[in-house]
Length: 137
Ligand SMILES: [Zn+2]
Image 1 (cartoon, rainbow, N blue to C red):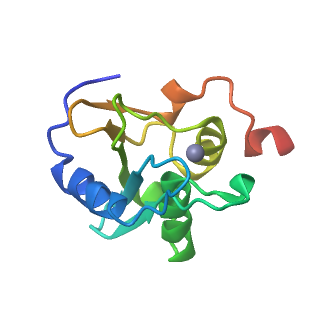
Image 2: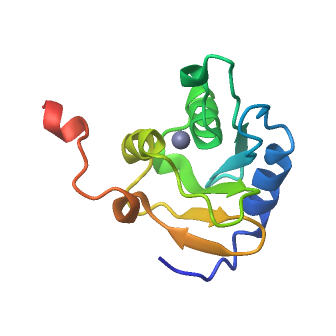
Image 3: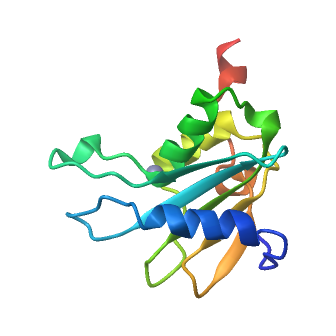
């Protein structure tokens, strides 16, 4: 993991803007995400909670599903930023790591920030020994 976030200002700013739209009345933990493509398209997501807690969907899944819904595929994605208003940097949950392991290239930058600290990582760092499409061939 690297702490140098130079070059990720735009994608971070858009993720923080998306965080403003989080619907988190139960946890009060707000998350935003932004997928940025190589051709400068961006797809945002925020966490959306539900009184039936298991139906909650995380910001990064909403953002990457939006990108895919608009025709993007993993090779089109330049970076994804995931930001929160937590006291420490919020890393993706286990479910999101599984999703990102299939929908991102292994070395696509994942930029994490809580507005005070930031770092850059990859899905191969966040989820080693992945179960993925290769296992189903
Ligand atoms: Zn998640």
